[in-house]
Image (cartoon, rainbow, N blue to C red; front, side):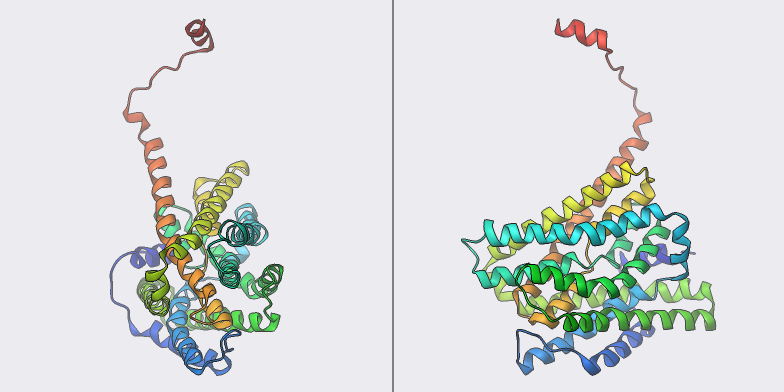
Length: 370
């Protein structure tokens, strides 16, 4: 019988059928949060607002299954081995947002300046910033599972990231957007993250505690969690389909714009992953902790980024488009990185299958070059 995140991630990577409890939960969450949803700042159109409300239902359904997996009691246990957690937090909040701002500004303001209007460049930068300040709490479970990482550390970081986003996302986002001359009221950003993360967090916590109390932990992990990943994946796909329909004319008519957004996002992902992996090596972390540490930093909570961009700037904005491109880039890049890690581990584990080739000593090399 599978347990915890291993069960969820294994099922999330395969086909299956979702059951009704998570769907009911995320639907109820959408109704609660929809009472006071903020309107887009740069759009003042009723159709846009209605579309934004419709899209928050699949977004809520994508985030709700993440929250029901979190065991917040494990956060307390993380203090017993703080090095992997502190490394991940520093990369997530002290490094990654600023490297994203750097790459977004360099490419959009300077390298691509002759090809992109200034107002659109500003909008793309906003979307990239919203991606950079949203540490992953969803797909990283899949990446860590595929890379044979320590799922306990991954789940702890999912819990910590969910909590820290409620505190740090709004002030850091407001600061970085302001540094790029993108004025967003702090309270608007705060209420947005509160609705999209806070409500999901409370709904997930309530579901977890009540179902475990009534049905027991074994049933919860082996039955309920087994299918929630299917809801998350399906809802995310529906969200992407809806956004691609709205942005389809840009994707089809201006593929170079997509490429110009994708290049700095690709560089950002590879840079942060490399930094996290190198830092883990320097700090002496085990591979099982190094893998999720580097992947959590490199990946983004694109559900939150998409929701925030759509709320602040509108579904048809350049900011929303940049967050969609972020999803399209992250999935294949992270799969490529997982494949690289697995191939390296396979090579190291199977090197005993082959005869070792003697390496020449210093004296032999000196004679060869004499």
